[in-house]
Image 1 (cartoon, rainbow, N blue to C red):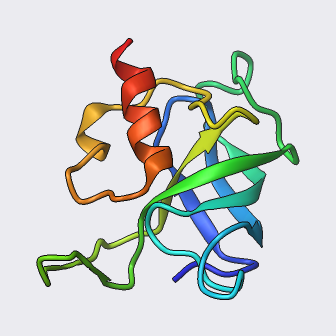
Image 2 (cartoon, helix red, strand yellow; image 1 turned 180 degrees about the vertical axis):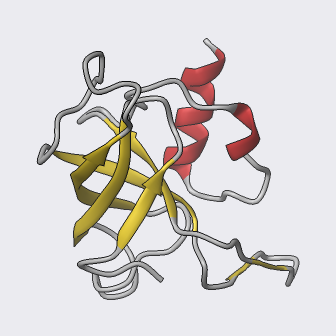
Image 3 (tube, one colour; image 1 turned 90 degrees about the vertical axis):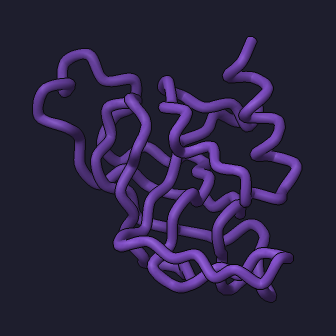
Length: 124
């Protein structure tokens, strides 16, 4: 579960390395967010190789889509899924990814509509 103050790794090629959660938009009582939820984040650090050509700046406030969480996530088929890290993809105001995202992160257990929209945008 992701809450305010949680640090997340960024797994797209936008140039950001770490982000910190500022606000949970959707989730359990707007307090905890899980996989597939959209949150508001602040960029805390950038990747060393891409500082000059980065699409984001340090301290910038953006939206992010949670892709991986340490806490377990249950599917409808009662499978439990968890990862070793908390990760997110940075989004624009129109819920499109800022940087290109690798297809391995679009897995079949995402159930929200926003992720399906992201997947369709990526295919075009």
